[in-house]
Length: 351
Image (cartoon, rainbow, N blue to C red; front, side):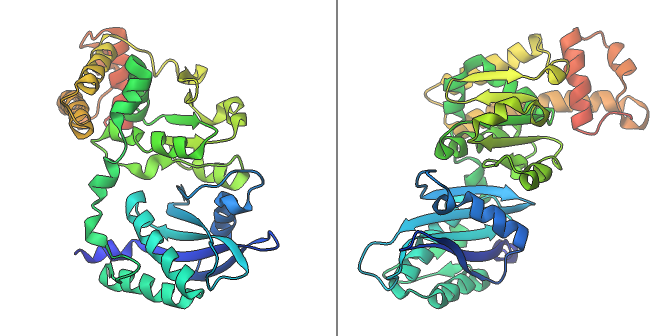
């Protein structure tokens, strides 16, 4: 096991709702900064008025991933004054399945003992040894949770099934490092959908662009704006009016995609896009092909385009592409436009 696997975990914390209906941050180890703590409290369904009950949510704030598991306390337990609690694990890596599994074990330990001490011991064992074993609470092995599994856990086929040829809009926005905002009133639907999208730009394997659960607060939007391109999920319908936040807006319940006026030039579609779109749809509709095979098919096409772009750059001064150099190739206008913006996204453009 690589030492870095255990060094990815940052903290574990507890939020409790007591019999009086008060929700409080009650404990953490080793520590959580005040800004992050406020964000985590805002994400906790126990602190939200009429927000519903969510067993597991995850998201990202200031380059820290958080994974929150919420449990209703069933009588009788050692937690006599607590009705519900949320276990919050923070980490440097995107891996919802890994931290959901660990959190389930920590929750069982907490319910049994009613004190954070045993839970902290289990957490420290995972941090130091990458393993947590007990007969009654289950076992957890960090090495069982490869990051590629997390990247491939969503279904790109489901995305294509819902959006068909329009999936090319997501693909184009992602490879050009544009800002995609997705709205759905149900957080579970948001998490499931948004986590898939970075796989369309598999050559980067960059899930740091994913912000699946964002509130329209100043601190969170300030953090989001630090990213040049992102996939951000919102449950608040008000986000549809925030055109300053997106190049592409996705109304997920109605399956409607809107490209903002400012992004229309960069996102203009041509024959190349149609060809890629058809490849994506044909691959996704093939019952014999798995989600990972579909992602590979898309990735092969992307790498083919990129290798052609690099070859063009190699013929230019400083191995950097210019618009004049592209014009000399007499590409169709939409292809030339796409390659120009792709070169900018891949830092192959002479500035």
